[in-house]
Image (cartoon, rainbow, N blue to C red; front, side):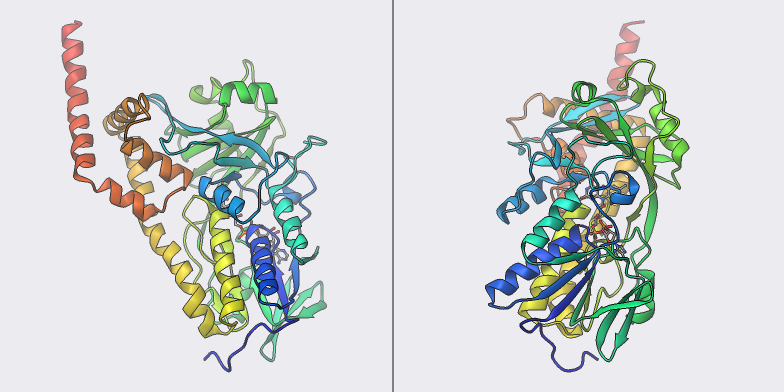
Amino acid sequence: MGGAKVTLHDGARVAIIGGGPAGSFFGIFASKLARDMGKALDLTIYERKSFVTHGASGCNMCAGVVSESLVQTLALEGINLPPTVVQCGIESYYFHTLDGSIEIKSSRLSQRGIATVFRGSGPAGSVAKGIQSFDDFLLQKAIEHGACVKRSFIDRVCMEGDKPELYSGGNMLQDCDLLVGAFGIKAGTGKMYEDIIPGYKVPPTVKTAQSEIELGSDWVAHRFGHSIHIFLLRIPGIKFASVIPKGDYITISVLGKDPKADHIKAFLNHDAMKKFLPSGFKVPEKFCHCFPKISVGAARKPFARRTAFVGDASSTRLYKDGIGSAYITAKAAAHTALLHGIGEKDFREYYFPTCKSLNRDNLFGQFLFAANHLMSVVSPISRSYFNIVRCEQKSLQKNTPYSDILWDMFTGSRCYKDIFMRTLHPWWIIYLLGAVVIYPFKKAVFSFINR
Ligand SMILES: Cc1cc2nc3c(=O)[nH]c(=O)nc-3n(C[C@H](O)[C@H](O)[C@H](O)COP(=O)(O)OP(=O)(O)OC[C@H]3O[C@@H](n4cnc5c(N)ncnc54)[C@H](O)[C@@H]3O)c2cc1C
């Protein structure tokens, strides 16, 4: 099935389709490792977008939260995000429900470990704001490590013998020893591989809605602070919405069933959100918005002889830290290619376990998000939970297990299995059930006394 052993020799040609985080990370790690091994690679990243333009054409459409664990891991790799890339350092999460709001800080977060970034050079119309795109920053790092970047849309890949050949607009651009599919899920490029790579299937996706609104840096800092705001408001068609502060702008991400521009407007016009907007704020006629797909599953068989898929085109963490997953999969694929080989067997043995571990963890994530959704729609449970969390937040020096569960789920800073195991602690369940029973009882007693 895999054929004779194939490896990346000195001067081997590597073609990466997609210059988002996964493509750049692969370029960085493969070049670094090759150099350490005394080899040189002829490595080209093909990217259809220019990340120095504003609006959708130069943007990879995402909420742009770089997780605590990724910020720290990148720093250890010598990749420090500069102030022009980081729009805001995050210190806390706010949860807003119909029963009130609560701020959650983690007892563990000792410094500004979470960063918000723009994936492009800023929203449509944001001319000359001095914003550097996160994706452009990573792409420049890949170039520094020796990768060459070409601005082309790869619309066809063929196998000539056992080597992949890349085409754009009818022209053959190159053949290669290794093809890396880092094209994400937003462009629909993955479908073309289902025909040429036996067994590969793109991950399942759902549509999201995303918008960027300019409010001015003073207003954003004053009303949203260094916090990510999660709104669980039971607006029809919206599961939850998050608001992320970024300099002059806020980024709104809406998750729901087939979200549309009207859902963004309904959210902005909701009383709970209006409190955060300047008085008399009106949703502009034209505002920067898009409907990117988000992965909710895993690709089937993300590898073949001389081919590996990384990032969203392979496996990614459910709803969280997709950029962190791009880092993990790209690094594992680069190490496999250089240390073990580029045959199907090599990727199956050394790369695929990384994807499977992300996929298994997502099963726990699915359970946690379903439980969170249930809790947010059943008032007595959400009120009780938030009451416990409120008490914990008064003293962050102590253990804060209930806050940490929410924090870890929404920041993506721990694996879902670890969070799930913590929810199984008997005290967790007893205390929560106790609170669910005691809260209505206390309320009934108070209303009886105050009659
Ligand atoms: C609404 C929303 C919010 C999100 N929020 C977050 C968040 O806050 N934090 C986080 O970590 N993750 C978040 N994610 C997930 C994150 O966007 C992805 O996991 C991450 O971008 C994956 O990186 P990637 O490089 O695999 O793919 P992408 O970022 O999609 O990059 C793929 C690149 O390939 C290029 N490309 C595609 N096809 C071709 C082709 N044929 N030829 C040339 N170029 C091509 C594209 O132009 C693109 O630049 C969010 C996703 C969505 C939809």
